[in-house]
Amino acid sequence: LKSIMDEEEPPGNIKSEITRKIRNTKRTKLLKEKYNNNCQICNIELKISKVKKYSEVHHIWPLGKEGKDNFNNMLVLCPNHHTQFDSAFIGFNKNNHMQIVDINGNIMGKLNYMKEHVLDKENIIYHINRMEKL
Image (cartoon, rainbow, N blue to C red; front, side, top):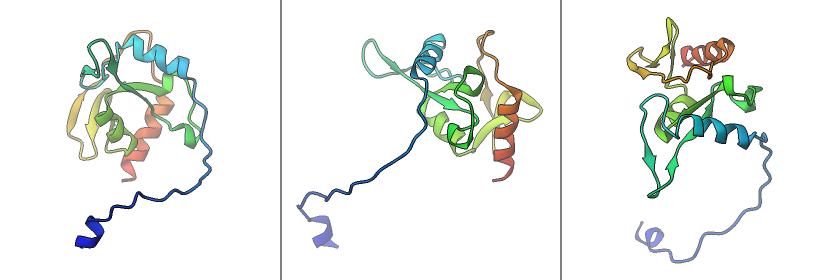
């Protein structure tokens, strides 16, 4: 074990090729601005400098699973809530889509919405179905 931990050679490289969906970065930037880069669940203000804040946009129905890259499929989240949404550990309460619950049904919070930002119910149902399969 000591020889592995003391290894001083830099790691090697591997060449790979990936294919990814091209996102509309103007759209995600606009949505982040609309919410002032605050998480729609916890309202956290994650500052990364004196003047900049950080947030992430989550696609409720993933683009890689044929979800659409539009506002009614997007949430502005902090990195923690984004990761939990991606893994379907948290999501929409099927009886009240404004509430966010974990996979055990515990209420995690309430979504903060701007009145002109409306989610497509089809996207919400998709995510609820993902959670129920876990």
